[in-house]
Length: 245
Ligand code: PEP
Image (cartoon, rainbow, N blue to C red; front, side, top):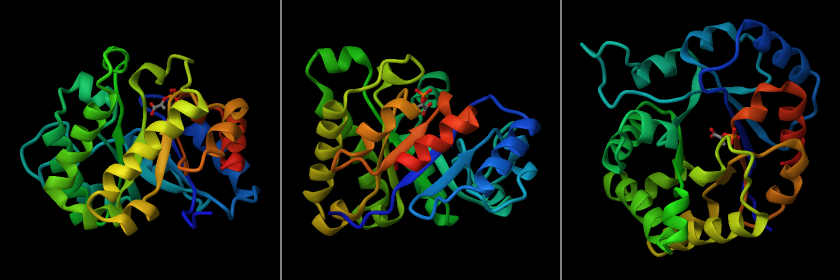
């Protein structure tokens, strides 16, 4: 049995509104969720709209710059000031839409840590990489870029999310065995450097998780919770996922 505390994080992406915040807060303030850390990552303008303590808040990205003339960007210090504890970094949509390389993601992880934010650091392979048999090399390269920038000890304060790109928003969930296989690989990869850190590192699964498949996914020994996209916009479904963690 691990003593890792489960986390379920909702990534609203560019969705949601003030009414959804009210619904979420009403439902979650009455739920018994002492076994899990629940995180909501709304679009930036909505961060100030949350007033309860039913869940922790996270951003969906940060700039790798500290401040200055970078129109449209958001600094890590600003998220911290808006009571965020977490930030999603390296999400596959940012890697694809904004050309975020492994090295840029590593810089952002470094900046987040310096500002006391916990990175929800995403790794995951596109379908063609899995089919070509390069899955583990691909994930290792994503991990190694961050390890070489911030050092293995920093993984005490980093949450990893394994999100196979082919499972995100597609309804195609990785099977529990597929998820477990990659989570175990990630842990073994960290253990090559520092076995205690590998044992305590929280590794989330993301990719079409729903209330109906969460129990089986989360029961895998190396799956410590989930990063949830679409289903995090449905308060009841998101709650049932949190209860499954
Ligand atoms: C995500 O965007 O991180 C995600 C896992 O999305 P979905 O749950 O919709 O597949």
